Amino acid sequence: MRAARYITGWAQARVSGAQPERILTALAERGIDFWDAAPPRDYTLRFRIPAGAAKLLPRLAETMGCEGVIESVHGIPALWHSARKRRTLLLLLLAAVFALGASLSHIWFIDITGNVTVPDGVIRQALAECGVDIGTNWLAFSQDAVRNGVLLRVPELRWMTVSMQGSRAHVIVREKRTYIEPVPEKEYADIVAAKAGLVTQVQAKRGTAVTEPNKTVLPGEILIGGYRTGRFGVQGPTRAIGTVTARTWYEITAEAPLAAAEKTYTGEKMLRFALILGKLRINFYKGSSICPAECDKIIKRHDAAADGVFTLPLALETVTLRPYETRDVSELELREELSAMLEEELSRRIGEEGEAVEVKYTASEANGVLYVTLRAECLEPIGVPSPIEANEIP
Image (cartoon, rainbow, N blue to C red; front, side, top):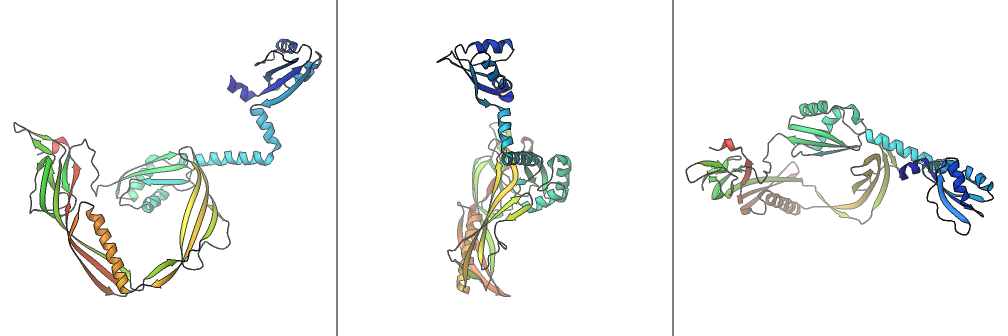
């Protein structure tokens, strides 16, 4: 009832006189609804009536020797009447509604998840060729046609789907299995080698060890089988648990031009602002955002969107320019910098549980480029879970 009255509109009325309650009888005789009438106080009666009867009330009260006043009008008709007096506000409201309607049927943002080795740019290019791009009407494309087109253009993918949330396209992909995926805890699994190495120790807490120390293994080779033998010699599937440690060897090379320079920031910052409307860009600065001197460029984008509700093709972009000065770096400094980078990369590859037993560095120069190579012998766990089916056990 309240919602209906808000849609049609209602008015707060006040009638003052000797017998103001007679107005209620007159309204009832004319079939005019009223509600929230309070007992008269100080010869004044207040109540509510439909907005359509607001003009009739003063004349009707006058015939009874009373004064009728409309104190306020509420509801959608009152809001519309108020908005008509403010044309600029009304135009802005209509523009916002139009922009929101356009936003809900067009793609303004594309999120890609699930890719490990295939770059986002490759998938975006394939989507654009299949009709899924910024500014396109998502109601016009076919899910099956887009999926088949992208999989044909990107053979590294084995599956993909596109779902819409407002004006944001969520693209989920799965690559052909060229890497070992995590295995849920409750699934049967072998422990296989993630990399090549010379086994030094095998600790099988569950499952059956199928390798032994001093044996060389290759990536993907089973180290601990996901099965176990019961009391009566019957084998059943399980999730292998254990650790296999092996000696591994790495050779990693980093390079940098001998004419390398080191940056020192001046402390100065320059800001640039731009408004992005769809594919239209409006710059609030003169010239370009290219720094007149050497500088770093940091871009931040603030979208007009409510996550999961709507996304407008409107964004504010801020560009921060940080000038810097450069100085030449000596060959010794460059070699130390590259060596530190290689050491960090080695630590990333062997993980926290790995240990570098022996590390050697060599350096060489060719065509103005310095090459530093790290050769390392390490001890590290190499076993990772790999899912199996119950019918795959020996």
